[in-house]
Length: 236
Image 1: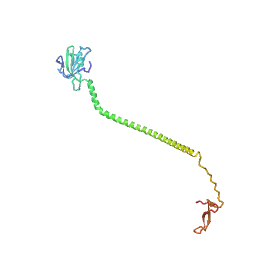
Image 2: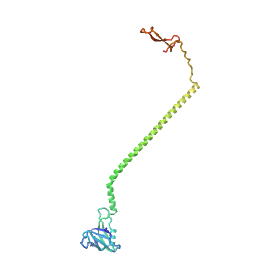
Image 3: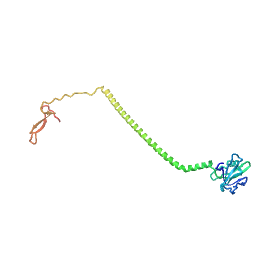
Image 4: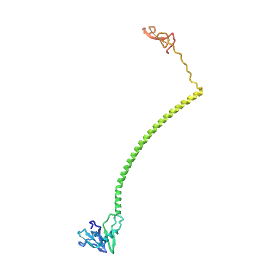
């Protein structure tokens, strides 16, 4: 026999309309039923939680316990009671059992956990999304800046080359126009005659430096530049 009860009753249970009671103390409100043996017709073991007495039942069998568990009313909400009415080989048993964990209770527990944790989970995800967006924006800005820098360098190089090409084209056009207008004649070149050096001693650029008192305003000897009378040149 398994130490864990197969059927835990709440309140009074009835078998064929008669109360199911403990034969020792007469209690019928805290009974546990264990399946005893391997055949359906074997009597079930009834244990009283009030006095601790246990015995084989004369009216409840293993087959009746299985019928009770199979016919238990499905609970729709938490407030529903686990009532039952089972029949096995003409024996009818009714009553209420302690609530068992079923799919409805699991769904209700999952909903309660979800409702309690949903706000925290949402806040956590919002923080993660903001951090991810900021990181993506930062990387995108860095890539955009690098692309713009490369594009500016390429544009500057292209502008410089275009300017050089335009200057070359202008020079070529001017040369062609000049050739067409003048027949290819270039500017006349004339050679200037070489300047002859003056033979007067001390003449530099048409001026002669002499030491004299006559031309001095102080009466002292001083050096004065006068025009050369030979080459007639003047520095002015």
